[in-house]
Amino acid sequence: MNFLTQFQETLKNAENIAIFTHKNNDHDCICSAVALQIIIEQMFGKKSTIFVDKMPTEAILCFCPHKNFSVTALKEFDVGITVDCAGLNLLCDESLKVFQRCKTTFNIDHHKDNTDFATFNYVKRGFSSCCEVLFWLFEKHFSLTFALAKAFYTGILMDCGMFCYSSANSKTLLCASKILKAFPEVKEGFFVCFGVAGFENFSITKKAFESVRFYENRQIAVSILRKSDFEECGCKREDGKFIVSYLQNIAGVKIAISISEDDKNEWRISLRTPCHDIDVSKIAHKFNGGGHKQASGLTLKGELEKALKALVLESKKELK
Ligand SMILES: [Mn+2]
Image 1 (cartoon, rainbow, N blue to C red):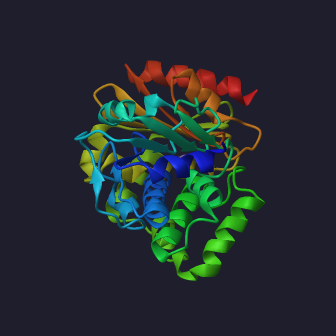
Image 2 (image 1 turned 45 degrees about the vertical axis):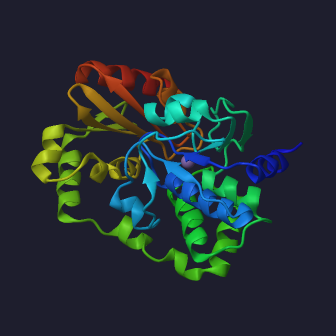
Image 3 (image 1 turned 180 degrees about the horizontal axis):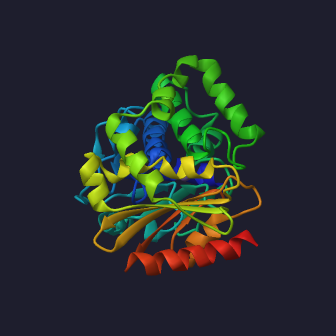
């Protein structure tokens, strides 16, 4: 039985359905979860619960205006479906507990390091986004409403660097084209996201730029922000999310690294590369992180200079 048939057979008989997103939720996993919830409602007339590690930020919700997320594990589910999750280590503790009690589990994803952890796995490795995987998987079964179109389009656009990463191919653009043909207005709003920043955002970017250190003839650029920097600028760690993209736009930079302090001696690190022949997920994997060839992330604990040294060393290896 193929994945889709198995999915339909299982969902037909399911009473309680849970959808799980990954830790440090992003546009793609939230939009995938919301899209899947709409698809399940259309196909089976059933409600489902979306589990998140924390409430998505306003930057995500403005594109995906959805209110009913669950952060606590309250009940048992017949079916558990993960979206955009490469492995069980990507689920927060609460979500993992509920997921492990589900009778049947499904895993729908696009990460190449996905560990096929569910009863049924549908992993399209290297696809632009989980939203694109969902689009093609269910294409013949959903009717494209505006809410569904907006969720798909947002997840795709945000996960492949506005169609710039190597993961965005002709099929991705075909998918975007089908969405835009039905709802041209889904394009609205993204300019604000990429083109305009609030003053707090500007201030933290300025601080990040001042902190930049270069290595290997400016092929590696690293920005470092501490908790105190965010406090001084009156913003959250999420507000510094796009700094790493600025760094990779500096001519000559092959690996961009942004480091921000999450907790005392706990560093959240984003890696990007504009080069199609460099794979930053290899660097992330060395430190138990993960992600994609051109965009990955990880968390490091310990003293900053030591963590930085290890990170730069692994980056140098990847340059060769
Ligand atoms: Mn994704």
